[in-house]
Length: 173
Image 1: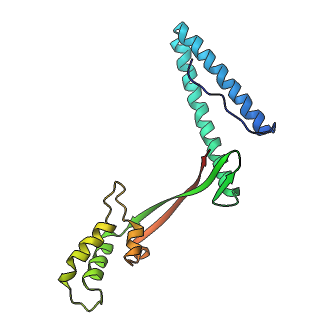
Image 2: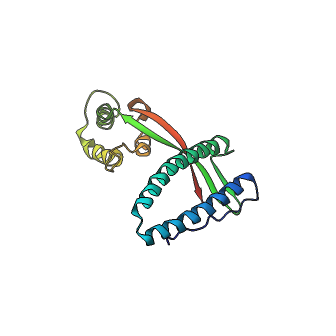
Image 3: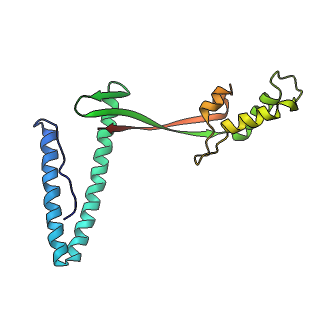
């Protein structure tokens, strides 16, 4: 038998708790049936069961996403600590589209000509290299380092378009 763990519920006997307990019981029974079919070598029934459980999992994923959206919509604060349960946190995914060429040109001009006189100060070349090392995307994401750019007083919003994705919920028990 597989190593399924019964769901540990700290819920009272509300309808949600009853549904989760029933689901947990059905899951354990399904695993017992799976073991019997595997022992009998009934690959055909196992394959049908696998297909059915994949469909069920897709529906379960849809339900979980709806619940996550509901929690995100009703969570009173971005981060809530629930005694005896854990920390619930609402997060938002963001993506940024950069005008990297424009940002690089601005950065080079700003560091080499900080007074904006039109004269390049080549003595500040090491300052430019250090600024680039701080802000360039030397990570797998290839996104500029926003905090470093802000620390260098670069106008990030002029060179970056931010798109916010759906909110997700993390639960640390």
